[in-house]
Every structure is written in C-alpha cells, then in structure tokens.
Image (tube, rainbow, N blue to C red; front, side, top):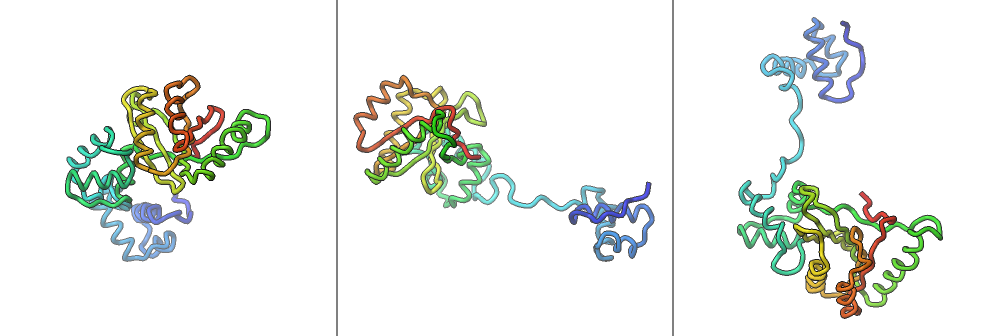
Length: 258
C-alpha cells in the first residue's frame, strides 16, 4: 500500500512517517523531502526504531510526574494525604495551611504551587465557583439573585465583609465522603471533609473555624446543602448576625463554573 503524501501534523507523526518511508524503500533524500526532517534526524530516528521499536521514536511525556517537585517522598505524601482528611488544629485547610503542616510534620519547605499540584492529584482541589446573573426577571433563579444575592452583596459592603462562595459535594475519591469547599474573592481555596452527611453541628463547627481564621465579617453563599429546616444553624447565625451572613443557593442556580 502506497503511503499518502500528506504533511505531518507534528514531529511525532513526522518521525513515524519517516520510518514508514524508509521501510518502504524510500531514500534518505526522498524521505527528507516528504517529511521535512533532516537526513541526520532521519538516520537517528530509524536507528532508534531498529533498536527499540515504535516506542523508541515517540517523545517522552512532558511535565512532572504526579507528586514530583514537591520535595516529599512517597511515604511523606501518603502521610500528608491522610492528615488532610482530618481537620487542622485551627481554621480550615488551605494552601498556606498545608504548607505550614508540611513544615511541621517533615521540616520541609514546600511552595503553594507544589501544594496545588498535590491537591489536584488527590482530588482535593476546588472547582471554580462563580455567581452569574440569571437571564430574565420572573424565573426562580432571577428572583433569588435579586432578593437574596444582591442584598448579601450590600450587606458585605456595609460591614466591609469578605465574600466567600461555598460548595458541598460528595468527594471524587469516595462517594461516602463529603467535601465542603470555600473560595475567596482572590480564588484562594479553603476546605474540610466529613465522613458522614454534613450535619448542622458539623457545619456550625466549620463556620466557627472560618470566623476564627478570617477574623473579618463574612458574607457566605453556600450551594449543595438544603438549609430550609436547619433551625440550629439559623439560631447560631442569629447570634452572630454582625459577623456572618449566610444564604443558600437553590438547586436551579448553578454555582460551579467549571
């Protein structure tokens, strides 16, 4: 079967095609003309093919391997991952908190960027959250935006409060574990996990940790939990009404943006 004279889309295709042409009896000059590769490159590629087969001419994967660049051994990474499934001593987990925990556990300095790579690998990273203004006026999402979200923004401005978007979902690594993510205006992420369905007492504990960690008043927009009958939570919020204002996002409003 004749090889079609098509321009290769990338270097890997050019290498494969060069080997195919040489196997079919094309000269070095003819192979170079059809692939755009130099004669020395074709010679090197074909020799690699003869020694190691097709796998030898494919480029090595780019980027770091999982966990590489963190400065932590496999055992240390496993220990850290287990630690992150429990609450920190104070506050909530975040990249800064994780970096501090690594220094405390192992005496190793780790960057927040390295922490982010580990969180992504372990499915502890937060999905991007954003509140979009719904189209229309009379639909439920538009009414929620007008009647609850806009007043929350006004309250935040009045009290000079930090705005946080929060999302509760089953953990990707285990459907029996639930993760509560919080995202600040600067897209920094905080989170905690629970091994049971999030209860009112657990959520109150999270909010108390959050208030202790952030200090300033908080305006919180929470999706993923039905707070309609959360009387204990509402009583706690009433006691802290100058420090925190929490609204629930109804199911018809999409908070996740990716």
